[in-house]
Length: 140
Image 1: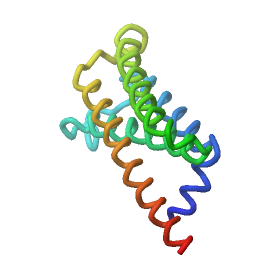
Image 2 (image 1 turned 90 degrees about the horizontal axis):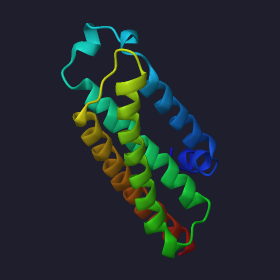
Image 3 (image 1 turned 90 degrees about the vertical axis):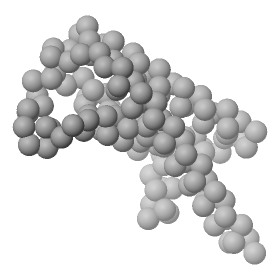
Image 4 (image 1 turned 180 degrees about the horizontal axis):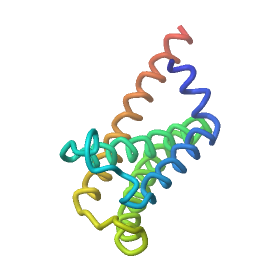
């Protein structure tokens, strides 16, 4: 599974597809989402925000990593991606408030976006440790 992830992440397509899917979901009018069933679970939208934004950070950081970002730059690049993804989340909240019908500004969504970005960062750091450990074992 991890080899497949490496293959997909070394191409920009995984990060682009995740970004486009996130943009589409954040831009849908509120009337698209039904009021009952699964959508009636309290704070489900926060979980979705965490998932989407963790995925953004994870996909873009892995893309950068497999494009051979120098080790001296990798931490800076990772945190820059987290910051950019968080800023994207803030901007999208204002866009939802002013331009998307039946959507509103929600500070809780911004916190969920930040939590998702940080979770994505932690996930990528875990992956890097696993990937580097695997590389060391191959050399021995």
